[in-house]
Image (cartoon, rainbow, N blue to C red):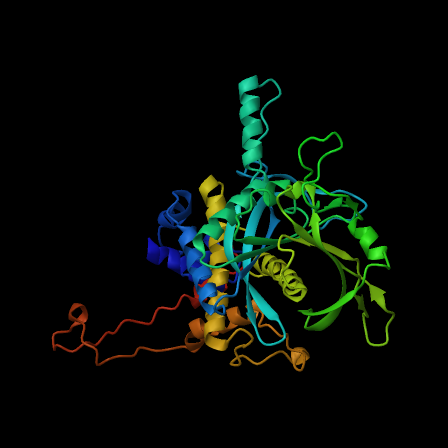
Length: 461
């Protein structure tokens, strides 16, 4: 069973057709064999994916400097589907839809955690997936359902809330690692559910709204207006947008790596604030990043992006470290792009509830293993040179080796020696099963190559 699953992980990288289970079997040259065991590998729950991601996480931790935290980005995404009866499929808001209209698409909702592996002196980092789970919503009961069934639905809805699922995965991760955990999230996870239940060893850096209401830390044992219990929130502070526009608040210049080079970010900060969704026991730091100017081409008009507003649960952590950790969060978006466009997660046409979760997660695990293999052989910023670069790409190589480049190298190593036609070899071998009357082996076995199967059935899947 383990050997079969290892073959599936290997075929995930070599597959030339759609990344379905059938496509993997075509790639492995198993068209003439019974496929039942391959499909039951997922539908019977025989695939243990948590140990696979534990191996990836432990390898990432071993590559980190001693005493440095593990910086992890968490985000959710949608795997589009067309069948309404597939387990976990529901109508969801399309994040790629236009701002002036809300679009809905059918799909699975998944949650991923990616660890940042820093390298170089400038602050570069490569993101590697260390966790991947399905996060479906609760199925709504029928209209004439009883009160007990509706109550069970509301409880299941709370358990399957995306923030509750993400919090459980973070809590589980914090128990496994032996170092501090830095969690970077967007506005979806910067809320009461996550902030109030975070473990003590987890530092959260999250994005917030521009109109969030903050309060000062009360000095001493202040009492309420009627002399009641001590106040837990001080006077009202300006909102993040008001902080950005307030010229009396000094600006700082912080350098951090992003988009291929080191930028100078103009930042304003309030070092000790309280926010009601985080609870009165947490003192936060508000960070306002002013818009960064850029040009579409040399000599073009100077354009500006939108400002960013962050909070950090550690108010004394250096700004440069906090900003750089949050900028590394872009790596999880790169992971999602590679997994969907290159590895085709979500393309598998499976209907079993266990297979729906296991098949995409196994592809993500294979993706993580390939990244670690590339780092081990070529380094974090290295790239294979056996295959020549396209002419249009010469002189403009990306700083990080694309995953497609590693896949091409893997295909070269797997199939490169089989591209040439081979005849019969090995006449001196002695096989008792094929021994002739004279005692010599005159009929050696013809080399078997799954390359033809992989290429011929590339479009048939």
